[in-house]
Image (tube, rainbow over all chains, first blue to last red; front, side):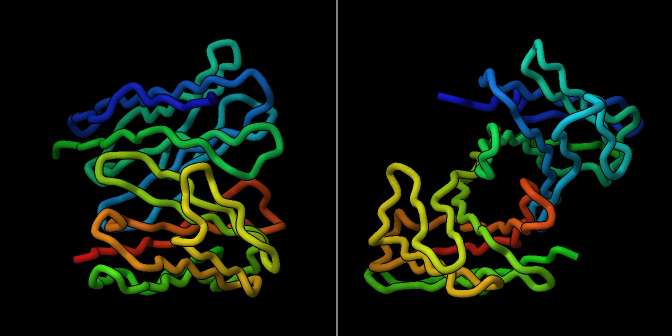
Length: 113
Length: 116
């Protein structure tokens, strides 16, 4: 069955550190890729998405992600994190033309001030 | 734009009663809405997909007679948990798709259901 795995369940960083959250999926066909973020007490919101074209996509708040097809990966990066980036981050994958998403388990990111 | 609301934000009910949760798209028309369940420290589990004017499609293992979904208009979908039991206690989240922004889901804030 298709699945999405996020390598780290918890990540703790200091402010200004660089961030990379891993996301891998198991599916050989066409994919649409998403990163969603859930700030404490708030609802899920889209951080960035990839449908086609340039595999390096830029999202809100300085986040970016790179789609590497050969590695079935869509890792999220930010060069310098801030305390306000403390949140839970979810990777999600849509398969072919399916609107339904397969979700990773999420990564809780804590930024120490 | 693309705001989705849910009501109520939290509800406590007794075993055996039914609870209705509303999901509304406030500034767009949602042709498709999804209902998810989120367990503590786990990812979102898709329960069902509802399209306006037609029956919902339930995921394997989700009881359609227990979790009644109605998508009567392009801005409203409801989830009714019938004869609720403590194991139904969870965080229920809806999301909506717009025809103009394919594949991108907009999420509601969620509803915390506690069954006593």
